[in-house]
Length: 383
Ligand SMILES: *Cc1c(COP(=O)(O)O)cnc(C)c1O
Image: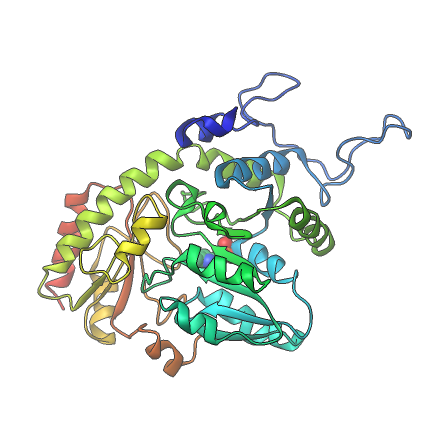
């Protein structure tokens, strides 16, 4: 029934919007670590909060409904969700990963999973031939992130997934930038969708959380074992707060994007800006593929001001955005990948991936766009 309803309706009627026992207008925060066995012959549905908690369960069902998968999972952070997905692999496995992946995922793959004898080849996924060329006898998984971070490159999800399926590879996709409102990777063949729910899903810079949705019950059973085994679950308070934020996802994303389009166009003709990255711009090389697989362009706009000193000056001169790591909040956030999200990446690798010293990333908030542009214009004129 719910499947035929529109996304905006699903956001508000996902199954956990009314407490079944009291009729309360939201799932209560079940702040409990354990659950009484009223009868040993009939064990309770929930028995211990690491293994299952009703508030977390409501959230897990919620994200699963939105992504159209088989089962959802909530974790303590986006990285907890991503690292749990990699625990599906075994020692000796090989991963093919998009080259301009989120900095934390890069760190996990290159500094931690290498010690577990899991090796990764990073490739430019805008070219499917490069992905195919990276295949090894021990390749087990492909990790996609599209649009990528922070240069917003586009990978053709359906093309990579059908090739991966032919080769028996597991596919994982970081859907943080698009959210299920704009992009639903399971419909395009992805096995596991991952989110830093800290960003647009939560939307208010007040909760750290990660979500995963798997496409099959078999994968669901395996992920459940990993989540319960690692114990990196999201607590009930944060689960509730995340659901609170997610209810307005559609409205926020639409308003974010209207602002982002205006900003990207405005920056494109600004004399102090060398280059603008936004999949909605006419000159973006991945625009056609992006439009095939997504319903929107999102609200992250990256641009190059032509040098490290100029970028640092800009960060000090703006007054509207938070100057910070993170994105996807109601307030605008300006970040500096070279010294923040991608500081863990060696310099030569970073430059090779287009993350220059002059590149800044603007996560466009819900402020009045004229104020955002006015503030940036004042700052850019000082460079
Ligand atoms: C922030 C982010 C992550 C990591 O999420 P945390 O909640 O900070 O652990 C992963 N992927 C992308 C694209 C992100 O922006």
